[in-house]
Length: 206
Image (tube, rainbow, N blue to C red; front, side):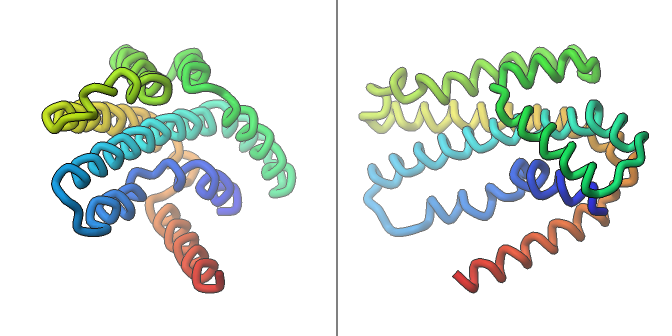
């Protein structure tokens, strides 16, 4: 269990899509606004959700690399918890520093992706880079009127769907391997429950 808690806390939970539902609807319902202000807020919310889901894909890639690259050698060497923890931290720190493009290249080189996933990954990278580096600049005029903002929301929803789809595709490759290493759904639920309880206790103290 200790081996799994390490990656669950730093990789699986931050990239878990269930989290967005805890914040996205709240953002849209925070207060009563005039229609224009509400739509502007909705654009920001959908943009934020799209960026979040793109990061979920990054985390899904890192999780895949953990089980296809790190685990095979780490588990076979029967390391103690301290050695495993140090090795995991080093692996994670290295992968977290990589750009999405570098992570996608790493995933493709691992040889565990299908042609369909690889095509989708190229699309993910293009969309993610657009969101990060030029989206609002390219949509500056659209953002100033209602129909333009409606178009922005629609295309952001399309990107969200893409990111969710690719996250799911990668996870469907990763999780069967994780289960072969002994990671069960019950263990995931248990770790999730423990972390949420810890977070609530910490928030109550602050």
